[in-house]
Image (cartoon, rainbow, N blue to C red; front, side, top):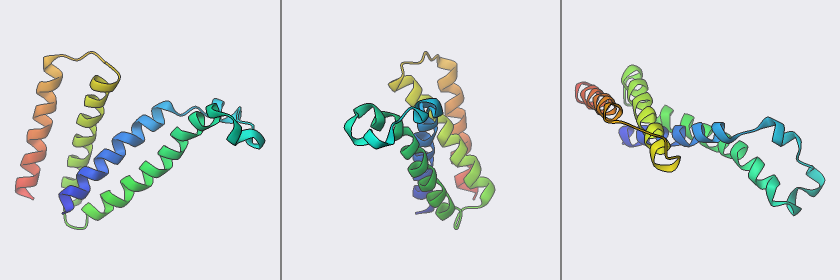
Length: 121
């Protein structure tokens, strides 16, 4: 179950990363809180901030649950590797970032390392 928690924590971290990417403190300052519910733009500005908090807290909860049964070094390496791969795949799929064969090769090597760490833990 700890490895499932680790994967969930990685998914939360990926979402947290993209919330961070879309946050804008400048736009947050432009919200007129008196008329917050009447304008759709206000929700679009506030949503990344809400996601930042929710996904950040979820990440911490699930990562800490996974570390109860997985050693800290193995959990951290696997969590970071899964997060890196997931973030890159999301950039390729959702944001149409260019990619090449070498990137997939190196992501495969990261996966091999994660599997190796899991097998030896």
